[in-house]
Length: 315
Image (cartoon, rainbow, N blue to C red):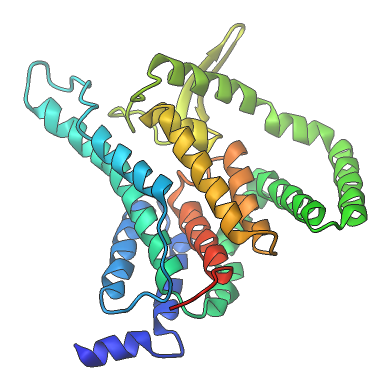
Protein backbone atom coordinates (compact mmCIF):
# COMPACT_ATOMS: atom_id res chain seq x y z
CA UNK A 1 0.00 0.00 0.00
CA UNK A 2 2.81 2.40 0.91
CA UNK A 3 4.66 1.59 -2.32
CA UNK A 4 1.56 2.22 -4.42
CA UNK A 5 0.97 5.53 -2.66
CA UNK A 6 4.56 6.66 -3.19
CA UNK A 7 4.50 5.57 -6.84
CA UNK A 8 1.39 7.62 -7.62
CA UNK A 9 2.52 10.63 -5.59
CA UNK A 10 6.07 10.74 -6.94
CA UNK A 11 7.38 12.44 -10.08
CA UNK A 12 7.24 12.42 -12.95
CA UNK A 13 3.51 12.77 -12.21
CA UNK A 14 2.27 9.19 -12.75
CA UNK A 15 -1.21 10.42 -11.88
CA UNK A 16 -1.10 12.86 -14.81
CA UNK A 17 -0.09 10.07 -17.19
CA UNK A 18 -3.02 7.95 -16.03
CA UNK A 19 -5.31 10.95 -16.20
CA UNK A 20 -4.39 11.47 -19.86
CA UNK A 21 -6.04 8.12 -20.57
CA UNK A 22 -9.40 9.87 -20.49
CA UNK A 23 -8.62 11.29 -23.94
CA UNK A 24 -8.97 7.79 -25.36
CA UNK A 25 -12.71 8.40 -25.23
CA UNK A 26 -12.59 10.18 -28.60
CA UNK A 27 -11.58 6.91 -30.31
CA UNK A 28 -14.50 4.91 -28.86
CA UNK A 29 -17.11 4.39 -31.60
CA UNK A 30 -20.56 4.87 -29.99
CA UNK A 31 -21.98 7.47 -27.63
CA UNK A 32 -23.24 4.79 -25.22
CA UNK A 33 -19.78 3.25 -24.87
CA UNK A 34 -18.24 6.70 -24.56
CA UNK A 35 -20.61 7.54 -21.71
CA UNK A 36 -19.82 4.26 -19.96
CA UNK A 37 -16.09 4.90 -20.35
CA UNK A 38 -16.43 8.44 -18.97
CA UNK A 39 -18.25 7.26 -15.86
CA UNK A 40 -15.95 4.35 -15.01
CA UNK A 41 -12.70 6.11 -15.88
CA UNK A 42 -13.76 9.04 -13.69
CA UNK A 43 -14.36 6.56 -10.87
CA UNK A 44 -10.92 5.04 -11.54
CA UNK A 45 -9.29 8.48 -11.27
CA UNK A 46 -11.22 9.17 -8.07
CA UNK A 47 -10.03 5.88 -6.54
CA UNK A 48 -6.43 6.83 -7.36
CA UNK A 49 -6.85 10.08 -5.43
CA UNK A 50 -7.64 8.05 -2.29
CA UNK A 51 -3.96 7.07 -2.24
CA UNK A 52 -2.78 10.68 -2.55
CA UNK A 53 -2.62 13.86 -0.57
CA UNK A 54 -4.29 16.81 -2.31
CA UNK A 55 -1.85 19.31 -3.77
CA UNK A 56 -4.34 22.15 -3.48
CA UNK A 57 -7.68 22.84 -1.85
CA UNK A 58 -10.75 23.32 -4.02
CA UNK A 59 -14.38 23.79 -3.12
CA UNK A 60 -17.23 24.97 -5.32
CA UNK A 61 -20.66 25.59 -3.84
CA UNK A 62 -22.42 25.87 -7.24
CA UNK A 63 -21.02 22.51 -8.38
CA UNK A 64 -22.09 20.93 -5.10
CA UNK A 65 -25.59 22.38 -5.51
CA UNK A 66 -25.78 21.13 -9.10
CA UNK A 67 -24.91 17.57 -8.05
CA UNK A 68 -27.27 17.70 -5.06
CA UNK A 69 -30.16 19.04 -7.15
CA UNK A 70 -29.69 16.43 -9.89
CA UNK A 71 -29.58 13.75 -7.17
CA UNK A 72 -32.89 14.95 -5.71
CA UNK A 73 -34.45 14.94 -9.18
CA UNK A 74 -33.90 11.16 -9.39
CA UNK A 75 -36.79 10.75 -6.94
CA UNK A 76 -38.95 13.55 -8.34
CA UNK A 77 -39.37 12.47 -11.95
CA UNK A 78 -41.48 9.33 -12.11
CA UNK A 79 -44.13 10.25 -14.68
CA UNK A 80 -43.64 7.72 -17.47
CA UNK A 81 -46.20 4.89 -17.68
CA UNK A 82 -44.31 2.13 -19.46
CA UNK A 83 -46.61 -0.54 -18.09
CA UNK A 84 -49.98 0.83 -16.84
CA UNK A 85 -50.46 0.59 -13.06
CA UNK A 86 -47.23 -1.35 -12.56
CA UNK A 87 -44.36 -0.95 -10.10
CA UNK A 88 -42.07 -1.39 -13.11
CA UNK A 89 -42.73 2.27 -13.94
CA UNK A 90 -41.02 3.40 -10.74
CA UNK A 91 -37.83 1.45 -11.29
CA UNK A 92 -37.72 2.33 -14.99
CA UNK A 93 -37.97 6.04 -14.28
CA UNK A 94 -35.40 5.88 -11.49
CA UNK A 95 -32.93 4.14 -13.81
CA UNK A 96 -33.42 6.79 -16.52
CA UNK A 97 -32.90 9.66 -14.08
CA UNK A 98 -29.96 7.90 -12.43
CA UNK A 99 -28.23 7.71 -15.82
CA UNK A 100 -28.41 11.50 -16.12
CA UNK A 101 -27.32 12.02 -12.52
CA UNK A 102 -24.34 9.68 -12.75
CA UNK A 103 -22.95 11.62 -15.73
CA UNK A 104 -23.09 14.85 -13.74
CA UNK A 105 -21.55 13.21 -10.66
CA UNK A 106 -18.76 11.57 -12.71
CA UNK A 107 -17.99 14.85 -14.48
CA UNK A 108 -17.74 16.78 -11.22
CA UNK A 109 -15.61 14.03 -9.64
CA UNK A 110 -13.23 14.11 -12.60
CA UNK A 111 -13.08 17.91 -12.57
CA UNK A 112 -12.33 18.09 -8.85
CA UNK A 113 -9.73 15.32 -9.05
CA UNK A 114 -7.82 17.16 -11.78
CA UNK A 115 -7.90 20.47 -9.92
CA UNK A 116 -6.81 19.03 -6.58
CA UNK A 117 -4.36 16.26 -7.54
CA UNK A 118 -2.76 16.95 -10.93
CA UNK A 119 0.90 17.83 -10.73
CA UNK A 120 2.36 18.52 -14.17
CA UNK A 121 -0.38 18.65 -16.81
CA UNK A 122 2.02 19.54 -19.66
CA UNK A 123 1.94 15.91 -20.78
CA UNK A 124 -1.86 16.05 -20.91
CA UNK A 125 -1.76 19.18 -23.06
CA UNK A 126 0.74 17.53 -25.41
CA UNK A 127 -1.79 14.74 -26.09
CA UNK A 128 -4.66 17.15 -26.64
CA UNK A 129 -4.12 17.58 -30.43
CA UNK A 130 -4.14 13.79 -30.89
CA UNK A 131 -7.35 13.43 -28.89
CA UNK A 132 -8.98 16.24 -30.85
CA UNK A 133 -8.25 14.62 -34.21
CA UNK A 134 -11.49 12.55 -34.37
CA UNK A 135 -13.54 15.58 -33.32
CA UNK A 136 -11.73 17.79 -35.84
CA UNK A 137 -12.38 15.24 -38.56
CA UNK A 138 -16.07 15.19 -37.64
CA UNK A 139 -16.18 18.99 -37.55
CA UNK A 140 -14.69 19.26 -41.04
CA UNK A 141 -17.16 16.69 -42.35
CA UNK A 142 -20.15 18.56 -40.91
CA UNK A 143 -18.75 22.04 -41.61
CA UNK A 144 -19.05 23.05 -37.96
CA UNK A 145 -17.73 26.52 -37.11
CA UNK A 146 -18.92 26.88 -33.52
CA UNK A 147 -15.72 25.95 -31.68
CA UNK A 148 -13.53 28.04 -33.98
CA UNK A 149 -15.82 31.05 -33.64
CA UNK A 150 -15.94 30.62 -29.85
CA UNK A 151 -12.14 30.51 -29.76
CA UNK A 152 -11.85 33.74 -31.77
CA UNK A 153 -14.36 35.53 -29.54
CA UNK A 154 -12.48 34.31 -26.46
CA UNK A 155 -9.18 35.62 -27.81
CA UNK A 156 -10.78 39.02 -28.56
CA UNK A 157 -12.16 39.22 -25.00
CA UNK A 158 -8.77 38.23 -23.60
CA UNK A 159 -7.01 40.93 -25.65
CA UNK A 160 -9.46 43.60 -24.50
CA UNK A 161 -9.09 42.58 -20.86
CA UNK A 162 -5.30 42.79 -21.18
CA UNK A 163 -5.47 46.22 -22.86
CA UNK A 164 -4.39 44.96 -26.28
CA UNK A 165 -7.19 46.97 -27.86
CA UNK A 166 -5.70 47.40 -31.32
CA UNK A 167 -4.99 43.70 -31.67
CA UNK A 168 -8.53 42.95 -30.50
CA UNK A 169 -10.00 45.44 -32.99
CA UNK A 170 -7.95 44.06 -35.90
CA UNK A 171 -8.94 40.49 -35.05
CA UNK A 172 -12.59 41.57 -34.77
CA UNK A 173 -12.49 43.24 -38.20
CA UNK A 174 -10.84 40.19 -39.76
CA UNK A 175 -13.41 37.89 -38.15
CA UNK A 176 -16.39 39.96 -39.28
CA UNK A 177 -14.95 40.14 -42.80
CA UNK A 178 -14.53 36.37 -42.91
CA UNK A 179 -18.08 35.90 -41.62
CA UNK A 180 -19.44 38.19 -44.35
CA UNK A 181 -17.58 36.24 -47.03
CA UNK A 182 -19.04 33.00 -45.68
CA UNK A 183 -22.45 34.43 -44.84
CA UNK A 184 -24.60 31.89 -46.74
CA UNK A 185 -22.87 29.03 -44.92
CA UNK A 186 -23.04 30.84 -41.56
CA UNK A 187 -26.73 31.53 -42.07
CA UNK A 188 -27.42 27.92 -42.99
CA UNK A 189 -25.58 26.53 -39.95
CA UNK A 190 -27.13 29.04 -37.53
CA UNK A 191 -30.66 28.88 -38.91
CA UNK A 192 -31.98 26.16 -36.60
CA UNK A 193 -30.46 27.56 -33.40
CA UNK A 194 -33.12 30.18 -32.56
CA UNK A 195 -35.84 27.60 -33.29
CA UNK A 196 -34.20 25.13 -30.90
CA UNK A 197 -33.78 27.80 -28.21
CA UNK A 198 -37.45 28.79 -28.46
CA UNK A 199 -38.47 25.16 -28.05
CA UNK A 200 -36.14 24.67 -25.07
CA UNK A 201 -37.47 27.86 -23.44
CA UNK A 202 -41.00 26.57 -24.00
CA UNK A 203 -40.10 23.31 -22.25
CA UNK A 204 -38.54 25.24 -19.36
CA UNK A 205 -41.67 27.38 -19.02
CA UNK A 206 -43.82 24.24 -18.83
CA UNK A 207 -41.78 22.83 -15.91
CA UNK A 208 -39.80 25.80 -14.54
CA UNK A 209 -39.06 24.34 -11.10
CA UNK A 210 -38.21 20.67 -11.65
CA UNK A 211 -37.86 20.32 -15.44
CA UNK A 212 -39.06 17.38 -17.49
CA UNK A 213 -36.41 14.83 -16.52
CA UNK A 214 -33.37 13.57 -18.39
CA UNK A 215 -34.99 11.31 -20.97
CA UNK A 216 -38.24 9.66 -22.00
CA UNK A 217 -37.96 6.00 -23.06
CA UNK A 218 -37.36 5.95 -26.83
CA UNK A 219 -36.69 9.68 -27.23
CA UNK A 220 -33.33 10.21 -29.01
CA UNK A 221 -30.57 11.42 -26.72
CA UNK A 222 -29.79 15.16 -26.95
CA UNK A 223 -32.48 15.82 -29.53
CA UNK A 224 -35.83 17.62 -29.26
CA UNK A 225 -38.94 17.55 -31.41
CA UNK A 226 -39.45 21.00 -32.90
CA UNK A 227 -42.47 22.26 -34.84
CA UNK A 228 -42.86 25.86 -35.98
CA UNK A 229 -45.76 27.43 -37.91
CA UNK A 230 -45.39 26.62 -41.59
CA UNK A 231 -42.40 24.33 -41.16
CA UNK A 232 -41.97 20.88 -39.64
CA UNK A 233 -38.37 20.47 -38.45
CA UNK A 234 -38.82 17.18 -36.65
CA UNK A 235 -35.91 16.02 -34.48
CA UNK A 236 -33.12 18.59 -34.05
CA UNK A 237 -30.02 18.54 -31.89
CA UNK A 238 -30.50 20.57 -28.70
CA UNK A 239 -27.83 23.16 -29.51
CA UNK A 240 -27.52 24.86 -26.12
CA UNK A 241 -26.19 22.98 -23.12
CA UNK A 242 -27.48 25.47 -20.56
CA UNK A 243 -31.08 25.55 -21.79
CA UNK A 244 -31.00 21.80 -22.40
CA UNK A 245 -29.97 21.09 -18.81
CA UNK A 246 -32.52 23.61 -17.51
CA UNK A 247 -35.28 21.87 -19.47
CA UNK A 248 -34.25 18.61 -17.74
CA UNK A 249 -33.74 19.86 -14.17
CA UNK A 250 -35.49 23.22 -13.95
CA UNK A 251 -34.47 26.85 -14.38
CA UNK A 252 -32.59 26.89 -11.06
CA UNK A 253 -29.63 25.10 -12.67
CA UNK A 254 -29.04 28.20 -14.82
CA UNK A 255 -28.26 30.02 -11.57
CA UNK A 256 -25.87 27.26 -10.49
CA UNK A 257 -24.08 27.31 -13.87
CA UNK A 258 -23.81 31.12 -14.01
CA UNK A 259 -22.43 31.11 -10.46
CA UNK A 260 -19.84 28.48 -11.36
CA UNK A 261 -18.76 30.31 -14.54
CA UNK A 262 -18.31 33.63 -12.73
CA UNK A 263 -16.50 31.89 -9.86
CA UNK A 264 -14.10 30.15 -12.26
CA UNK A 265 -13.40 33.30 -14.29
CA UNK A 266 -12.44 35.07 -11.07
CA UNK A 267 -10.13 32.20 -10.14
CA UNK A 268 -8.42 32.17 -13.55
CA UNK A 269 -8.17 35.96 -13.88
CA UNK A 270 -6.81 37.67 -16.99
CA UNK A 271 -4.33 34.88 -17.71
CA UNK A 272 -3.97 33.06 -21.01
CA UNK A 273 -5.95 30.17 -19.50
CA UNK A 274 -9.03 32.35 -19.70
CA UNK A 275 -9.09 31.69 -23.47
CA UNK A 276 -9.76 27.91 -23.38
CA UNK A 277 -12.24 28.27 -20.53
CA UNK A 278 -14.23 30.99 -22.30
CA UNK A 279 -14.13 28.91 -25.49
CA UNK A 280 -15.87 26.07 -23.67
CA UNK A 281 -18.40 28.43 -22.07
CA UNK A 282 -19.28 30.16 -25.36
CA UNK A 283 -19.35 27.00 -27.49
CA UNK A 284 -21.80 25.43 -25.04
CA UNK A 285 -24.27 28.21 -25.89
CA UNK A 286 -24.40 27.28 -29.57
CA UNK A 287 -23.80 23.54 -29.82
CA UNK A 288 -24.07 20.29 -27.87
CA UNK A 289 -20.83 20.14 -25.91
CA UNK A 290 -21.20 18.88 -22.35
CA UNK A 291 -24.00 16.47 -23.32
CA UNK A 292 -21.61 14.56 -25.61
CA UNK A 293 -19.32 12.25 -23.57
CA UNK A 294 -16.25 12.67 -25.79
CA UNK A 295 -16.48 16.46 -25.93
CA UNK A 296 -17.39 16.80 -22.27
CA UNK A 297 -14.42 14.68 -21.12
CA UNK A 298 -11.99 16.95 -22.94
CA UNK A 299 -13.74 20.12 -21.75
CA UNK A 300 -13.80 18.96 -18.13
CA UNK A 301 -10.09 18.15 -18.05
CA UNK A 302 -9.07 21.34 -19.90
CA UNK A 303 -11.23 23.57 -17.69
CA UNK A 304 -9.86 21.91 -14.56
CA UNK A 305 -6.27 22.38 -15.74
CA UNK A 306 -7.01 26.07 -16.37
CA UNK A 307 -7.88 26.40 -12.67
CA UNK A 308 -4.93 24.28 -11.59
CA UNK A 309 -2.43 26.32 -13.62
CA UNK A 310 -3.64 29.60 -12.10
CA UNK A 311 -4.05 28.30 -8.56
CA UNK A 312 -1.95 30.04 -5.93
CA UNK A 313 -0.65 28.25 -2.89
CA UNK A 314 -0.18 24.56 -3.73
CA UNK A 315 0.06 22.35 -0.67
